[in-house]
Amino acid sequence: MAARIDYWCEHCMKVHRAGEECPKRKAARKARRDTRKQCDRDASRRAYGDPEYQRNRQLVWEMQRGRCNRCRKLVAEKRKGRWRAFAGGVHHKVPLSKGGTNRLSNLEGLCIPCHNHADAALRK
Image (cartoon, rainbow, N blue to C red):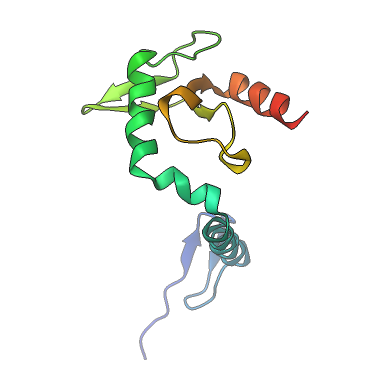
C-alpha cells in the first residue's frame, strides 16, 4: 500500500493529511468564487477590462509621471514599457455607477490615502 503524504498548509500553518482539505483554504476559495460572481453581475466592474480604460490608465500615469495628482507622491513606475501602480490607482472622478466614463478627462491617478479621501467625498 502506498504511503499517504501529509502536506503543510500555508493558509492555516498546520499539517494536513493527504486528501484532507484545509477549512481556511476552502473558505478562501469560496470567497474568491463569490467575488468573481459578484463582479460578473456588476456591469460597472466589467468596464475595468475595457480597452479604452486600459489605454487611458496608461496615459494618466504617463501624463502624471507616476505621481499622485493631489499630493504628488510617487505611486507608479514604468516597467517593460507599461506603468504599474504600486501604491495607488486610477480614480474615476465621476464613478461609472453614476454615469461616468473611461475617458481621459474623467480619470486621475491617486495614491491610496488620496484615493480613499476622494471616494469618501463622493459618498457624502
